[in-house]
Length: 256
Ligand SMILES: [Zn+2]
Ligand SMILES: [Zn+2]
Ligand SMILES: [Zn+2]
Image (cartoon, rainbow, N blue to C red; front, top):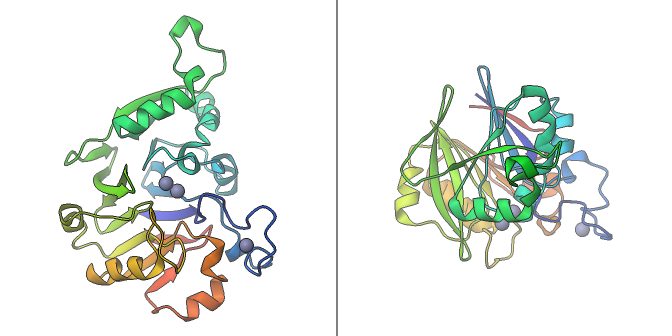
């Protein structure tokens, strides 16, 4: 299975509009972060987690021509803002895109993209079409050869889902994980986990909290994502971290 980091930036992305800091001004491509998302490819199956405002650009950059499904972690705009561009896949594939989301996130997606959920005779021609599917705790999601276990996380007061596939897990946008959810991550060897910045934050993990979770899980390797410009430049920050716990960057490919 190949995981591609489509985006590794926090909600504003990096560089931040109007910011003159040395991260935002860096010419190193690893300091340019689109909104957080990953692509998962296994055999003939290709899925992505979230479709934020940079979805179109990410699909073009990685030359994605087929997408079997989209998993939604939660309904903040940096994770769903690009769902309109699913149209291209509707046209190519001639089916409604399966979108897996919690019932709360589905409500928000239906409100946000109401034109795509109108009655059939009132549907605007060319609107994207979705096949919305519930994510249910303890019920694995099966997409072709992939079996995906949802992991419940708490993002301030919002439910957010992480996902585990075999020895790999992806967990972003949370500040609290229950013991029950933590247990579901045991045995994971490769982890992508959010780390917004060094300072503590009310709804996101900071770097030390993310390191703590990765170390308690005793993973072989972890990559940090959903990174803000306050984290510092890729190269300098990387040197301060243990070798097996590193910042992700856009375009990084991971074989698991
Ligand atoms: Zn986010
Ligand atoms: Zn900046
Ligand atoms: Zn969020």
